[in-house]
Image 1: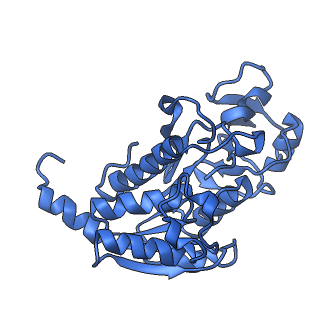
Image 2: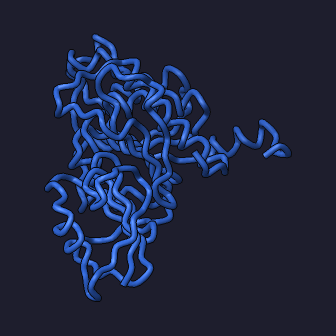
Length: 79
Length: 200
């Protein structure tokens, strides 16, 4: 299945093409892949993050589906 | 919006209720701006007391050191507009308690200081009330250009203010001018949403 993946802020450097930027990349994933599976395959750092699928908040355990748009945002401290 | 009168815009703001989670550099200054702009009701959430180290950027005064921030901020906001509607919540909210504060509010400002807290507020609000506009701040530390602080709509009802990268955990200090720029951007994003302009 094909899923669009957007990584915000410094996470964009973890895109497989290494080019950074916040535009989406198309991932070809095995059926049944979870968000946690994508995070692990990208070796994203273990830090606070917010996850959306198709603009809605989603848990890392959620299974992705064909055509989904996965976005991951890492807030940084200060206020 | 051209056919909407100034009185109608003011009326919309006056009828609105905004939840502000955290009354530090972001929240106290955003609250001041929303009250000056005419927002009618604020829910102020913070568990801390005013400390001398807050005075370099937060909307408090020396004679308020030691007071709960929610009470000190309420006093200051009432000096601007005595009739403003204020609900004070002097506690640290978490994923379990935050949903109780969401019914009846028209927008939320995330104004906590830790990355973990910001992630919790965003995730909890978007899970409990996905249709509720939420403005969060990320990346306002240091003395980088204020031009780098932008307002981004990264999901249907989620706006992020900041440069997305300047982190106090990297040892960057907080300057009043840049913190207040981010607070102003948060307050203005909420104002626009309340007035029916959802694009940042």
